[in-house]
Image (cartoon, rainbow, N blue to C red; front, top):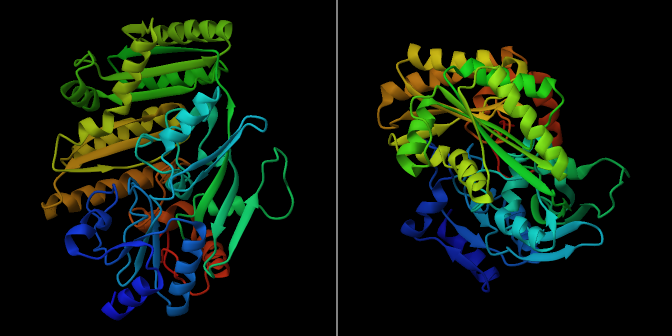
Length: 459
């Protein structure tokens, strides 16, 4: 960004904080996506929706690209800077404005941290279920931009399922509110749904109204240990076939188990091929019944041991083992690339086997964990971005895994979004006509192409 433009912005918005020194901009030149970097040039921190609106009008008048971000915990490069562009960071718009216990909803600014939203709901005796792995640092605006999932997605769904309304600054600088506090609201097109998962390419979400639900009365957590990954996958299929929908059904492979044990030392069995973390919640009687049935099904499918947590502390410790998976794997190699392939649940065992065979074929180290209950797998490449030859092998292996997943009726991302990391694979997943329709939608909302250009697809 040229100096004249930067100085003009700072004169126009003297009440806002800007960053433009090279050292200050380093954290804003990345998100959580390894091996992707783009130099940030100018960051501004609006405090109100009006600030955002005026900033967008300024940028639109001069055709300056805008990237919106919060904590930068995204995993697809969706918030990487655009050369010559402005980064609008919403981290100072972080207030929880209202907890409406009469209508079971909560209103917050886009920069509010997801875990704090969950805590505010809990303090009111209510429950906000979406729990992305980064929820302690990620913002609700980022969750909406990527339509984030989490460990409880199998039973409770993803972020989209809890968004009742959005305040959005359009590419023109105009502000709209789409949706409402009404449980039923079908008037007109659902613009709200278009913005969710649009990765900041259609508008800038500044406020959100979220649905809350009553807290479950009880919860039971189980851990099943296997000598074969296929047995864990078949246990999942058996649980679903038994018409049990747990709130959590997660797995870790052998490499991830050992990495977690090295890192967190929670007592996981180092010689296991896989572990399955299962959690059921709801009315007390139903929870006990479902927990017993899941334990039986795990044993029927050759789990060598099934542990049932007896206290809340034990449950927390087991869940933490899964939550620590990414952090633990990230300690193994200089570069950690966390992927996000999703397949029909019936194809889980084949896919996990294919991922390991692919890693062996290319001579790569890959740990796999994920949301087995909803078919969302996270093959995690442990590599070194400075080794160009190895990175070529990583790219080839990723392509093979995505091709395999799509060939099974799956997709290239279940919760991380497309950004720049998955853009090369989008046509394979969606087909050219779908992308053509999406381009028309983008042009309708953002005719000058200033909002996060070059993300998801090129115009």
